[in-house]
Length: 155
Image (cartoon, rainbow, N blue to C red; front, side):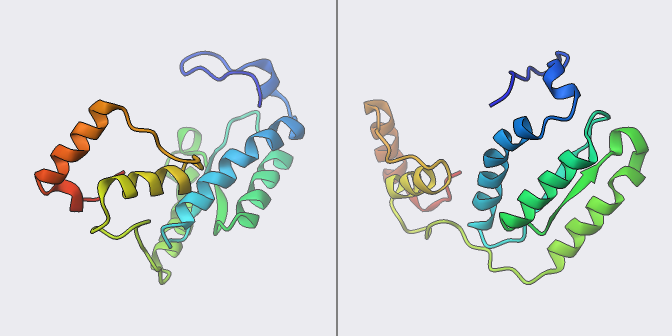
């Protein structure tokens, strides 16, 4: 919802000062990523790459949204500025999440056909309303199935 961010280019001035309304516009993206990760039955830890211009209010808004969406928490990553110490709290949170009992699962069983796997990913992860296949894709799916590759996971 905000100004464009381009790798290697300076951030737009809008991102240089606290703007909780602008930040709030980006939260649905964070929330969807958390929801997607939780579909796999594992704990989610959010890493916040802290910029020097980030404010306590912005960080708190991210933390609250992350926890409300089901994350274990949101932790600062300041490794670029503080070395290893800048990632210690995040690392501890990740270790704690890894030690929890999980119910890891793929979104589909291995024995599903390729198209059903693709459609499951498209609808559950990307929120698509379906999948249309070009003829070339149809041919590849048929070939992969004939080769016995249809039992492999799809990402």
